[in-house]
Length: 340
Ligand code: NAD
Ligand code: UDP
Image (tube, rainbow, N blue to C red):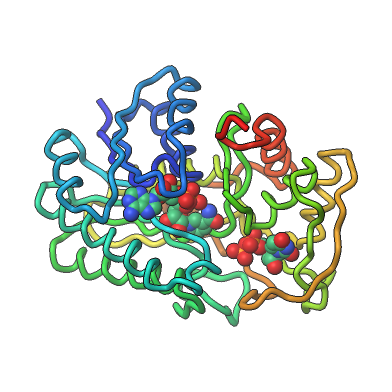
């Protein structure tokens, strides 16, 4: 019998795809989420798609005693995947105290609660944003940590807290630094459901669907082949599989820190993503060129070779599949998980 996994933030975008993957692989799953940026509907759909049951607790990591209650109800939990957190860069700059409180205090509560049990293994969602403005592209895990916004600082600080926890209490943690997760499950039943899309692909698909008027390219004067920003987009299903591989890596190496970039290693420009979407949706997508967005880098791509070697994991989906699945989700769910 496989381990029971606690998934924090499991109702969210990446958490719901990973929960689906865990259930498909035969894991038992306990999800906690405060639904600050998610809907229970995602988990209902995960159960329907897999034909399996999961356990859900509407719990806020800011309430430490509630985490203890969940852990005491489920003494069979052996590993944790910690997704829960706030993730909007702009919002973190406008309201840094909320971000530091939620992401740092929430994580500290979780770690303290786990430390009071015998659970010592965790996979943590970090981000390529910890690299800030990297000097070498593609970025490998040795690049300096120099975040440029409060959200990125919360990720860098949590990484440090985790390293200190490992050293003091002999834990095992895999830190995954995601590049740009996009796309949706092939069923079109679960996907990214932002209240307002800050990220490129959800914005483009909403414009294609007529929900928003036009896409603004944030700058076409970067030192990149077509002048628009280049990123390393990774299909969310590939990312979910990286978490399964990370749990396996913890089985093999139960203590110590493991740190991996999770991207495809291939960069696409904003204009290339627009062209790929245009080809998939087969309808006009109004576009304008605007100024650069503050804080953006010209290019950010990963060197994922360490994850390939150590986790035996590789991304399988190309840009076309990322775009096609994002559009399938958008078309099937014009209002996301809401009824209208
Ligand atoms: P998401 O917002 O869809 O999921 C995060 C989940 O955490 C939400 O369901 C939210 O309700 C929950 N949550 C937030 N604060 C909580 C709290 N105090 N207690 C309990 N639940 C709480 O985001 P996502 O895109 O699925 O991201 C998952 C993780 O991956 C986050 O930690 C994010 O920072 C990180 N990440 C995301 C991206 C990306 O582009 N999506 C890139 C790099 C890293
Ligand atoms: N971008 C854009 N228009 C948008 C949103 C994003 O041109 O409406 C660009 C952005 O400048 C970056 C790329 O698309 O070059 C990816 O941005 P996103 O916000 O999706 O991810 P980031 O890498 O900034 O976290």
